[in-house]
Length: 243
Image (cartoon, rainbow, N blue to C red; front, side, top):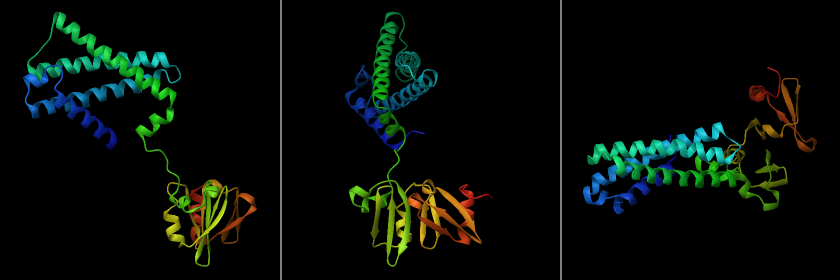
């Protein structure tokens, strides 16, 4: 599925091409058919390029030049076939001989250049590709309430009167906040409420033990957090206690 940002970018590119009308499309097509033409060509070309890129990364994950060759080798012929077919169906233009050779050289050259640019860019900065394809993990919102020097990995939340004490790997801070509101700001950090007064990040748990009908979790620094009986199933689901 195409990400919304990417779909917007592709649609924008198609709209610009429709306005400019390159390769003679402005002379032979009116505005709306021209827009439909470029939307179809840009979208289909992206799909071919995406498949070429995926294949290249699978066959040669660690070597740049083979990736470029594979991506360009798939993208070029694929896009050429699309252009040839779309021009024939939409414009009645089926190039042959020298015209076909010229078209093929143009398409293959553009595909090769784009393959080099994308592969080199993603190799130079892998985070760029990750950020483009999927949303990068965001730190939990509650950290924004803390002083900069205490914004470490979120470990736990504990109620103290009308406050919540936020424990991180870089310290702790009291916030005038309800526990329920604080938990809503933990974001994607794996963890759960284990007691009416405590929330714990699973990654912070260093040990767990049973004490009668409840449990005790040991966190960094030897700090212990109780787990009430009602919340024991969560601890078992997290693999912290035997089932």
